[in-house]
Structure formats: structure tokens, C-alpha cells
Image (cartoon, rainbow over all chains, first blue to last red; front, side, top):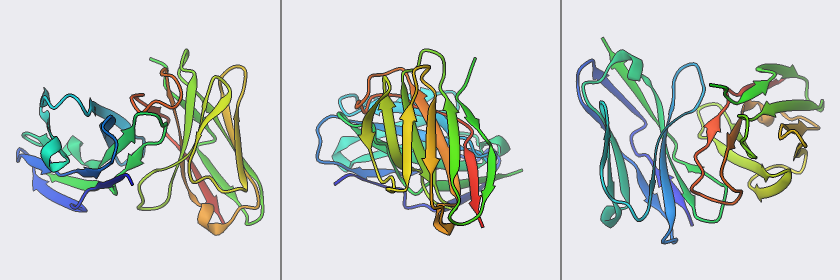
Length: 114
Length: 116
């Protein structure tokens, strides 16, 4: 069975702090894809990143970085020098190779205070 | 750049009524997905279409139906509405083939349905 766990329900930080959002997944497939989406207060879902199961290389995009570790089934997301505009709910999601279905975690609400 | 367009953005209905949500995908995207997000919940996959055929099916109630038309827009029809159907309904589109977990979905802004 596939499952995505985001144990942190809510995180509050002060601007310029670094913050890491945890994501642990479960799947029996050897080919799968992991995603992060951002849902700001306006409600839309914004794609941030996709990784496939064969590519464990970590990725950095500006203040965002992702750490994918198959050994621990984790795909964690770090925001460096957080800003108020980073305040949102962040969803980690999993899909397997032959399906359209994205399985979302329960989300982590990040609040960045000035 | 054109995004996924959903209409209406807000809809209020009474119990047992019918509602129809529309979705216009990004041009040249041939796969459309529907998700339901209840208050404080994560989005749940309902159904998807690739080239006007149902591609995959999730936890869509029997009271709901959907289809993709020749111009690739999609409609989600919901009948005999219940209070529990109150949610944010997202449509997403991708340019990838159906039934592929690799597809990157671009989501619309959502249609908020309130059932009274």
C-alpha cells in the first residue's frame, strides 16, 4: 500500500530561519515519483519539484533544497532563510509508475513570522 | 502563460441538488485530473482522463460522473449533493500520457462547493 506521512502538522519560524519539512513515504513499487506542492493561503496548488526513484541526487533551487534518501524512504524539503511569503501548507506526494493517482500527505502548515 | 481554468470558483447548493464544475486545461495538455480537498484535508484523487477516455479512477462516489470533451475541457457532475460534498475541487492537467506517475500536474485555482 502507498502512503505518505508528514508528521509535522504545523511549524512556526521567524523570518530568516532555516526550516526543514519532513516527508516519509511507503510503496512496494521500485519505480515511483515524489513531489512537493505548495498551497498558499489563496488556495491553489503550486508544483515545486518531482524526483524519480532512480535519482537520489539532492537538488537545490534558490532557497529551496530537497534531500531524497531511499534508505530511509524520506524526501525532506528545506527552506533556507525563510521569508513571510513562504507561509503556506506544503504537501509531499507520491505516485507510482502506472497510475495517474497522486497520493498526498496530510500537509505541513508553515508560518513564517516577520 | 495560460493556466488551468476552473469555473465556477464558488458554488453554493442545497442538499440533494446537482452541481457541475468545469475545467479548461492548459492548451496542448491532453490529460485532465480531478481532486477533492475537504476542509483541513489533503487532496484526494477522484478521476482522470487521457484523450477523452477515462484513464484512472480513485475514490469518486457513484453520485459523481465526469467526462472529457473533444476540446479537452472536462466537466465534473455531482448529483444528490450531501453536506459532506462541501470541499475544494481541483482540476489539473498534464501533457503526459495517461496512467503515468511521472506526469507533472498543473492545478487550477479550484472550485469551492458549499452544500447547505
